[in-house]
Amino acid sequence: MADPESDNRDVLKLELERSLKELADYKYALDASAIVAITDSRGDITYANDNFCQLSRYSREELVGQNHRILKSDYHPESFFAEMWATITSGRIWRGDIRNRNKDGAQYWVDTTIVPLMGADGVPEQYLAIRYDITERKRLEAELVRAAQLSLVGELAAGLAHEVKNPLAGIQGAVDILLRRKDPADPERLALEDVRSEVARIDATVRSLLAHARPRPLTRAPSSLVEAVRRAVSLASDHASAMELPVQIGLDTDPADQVLVIDATQIEDAVLNLLLNALDAIDGHGRIAVAVRREIDPDDGGAVAVVTVEDNGHGIADDDIERVFKPFFTTRSGGTGLGLPAVGRVARAHGGRVEVSSEKGKGSVFTIRLPYQVE
Image (cartoon, rainbow, N blue to C red; front, top):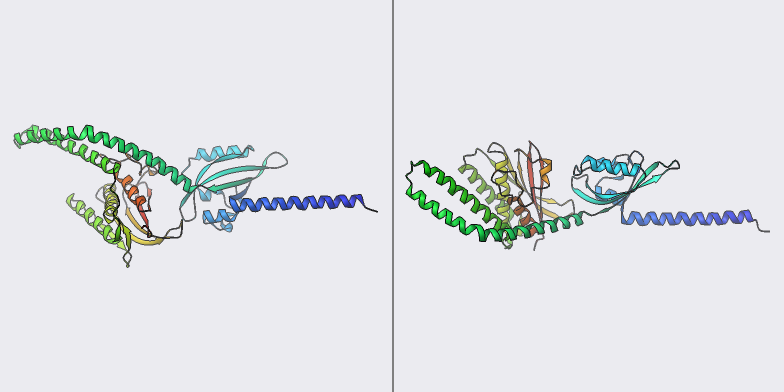
């Protein structure tokens, strides 16, 4: 005779096994597609999946027991995380984009959803964080913003070229005539020379705008990167000497020369731009070190040529780091704010990028990374 109680246990056992399998399948799918972490109620990591370890460059043993502050990039204000923490501790789901820093120092963006896992008392016991790497999306968004800015620069430059350059030429010509009529000792001559200097400065700004808005197309050929950098260092050294600045610019390169398919002239101009900025940053009384190296890119594992320009000058404020490559932003008196955007444009045109790290009062390091496969 059948035992109803035994049959009921068998049914419950099958349902439990089916539910456990479903949960295991869901976990497998989530781990395969997302970056997953679980923390305890204090925010300490208790679980990190393989995707989390791969993106953060930390091992699971290094992550478990740590707080997510280990990944903090200092990009977001404290109020950002205070609002996030207030949301999840109240039992609500939080969603947002976070910029983190991995173990190697590289920064990355993650689309993040944090789900509080509630206890029987209605208080969160754990937090499940589900993230997706959106670094490339953020880069493309920044490129779109930059393209829009460049379009605006182009329109502005074209208008300036039409409305400003011709009147400037007329003013400059008139001032030159007046200068030729003035005796060298005439006090009015100094005022006219000041006017001519200001006219020349405005003309240079307009020319910079035009050059930025209408960049030269690349003319690539197999070229020595070291020689391009060496020419830039020589020009910067000549400039420092002409300005009577007691500055030595050091150049350190790998023993093996690096030949890339590049526009050597534009790379030289980009490095020279960085060097002139460095000279301004050290106020003529500091140190500038230039290096050319072959490295492995931590992001994709490919070989890259790396040019660094390091100074021990006044550095860049944290609030300004994000803006230095934007057109028209400058902290220099008389600067146009177009030099660093031009460096970034040249690097991107070669399939590379430019980076900056800086500490206020201690100096800055600008790095140009160029891939070897740029044909």
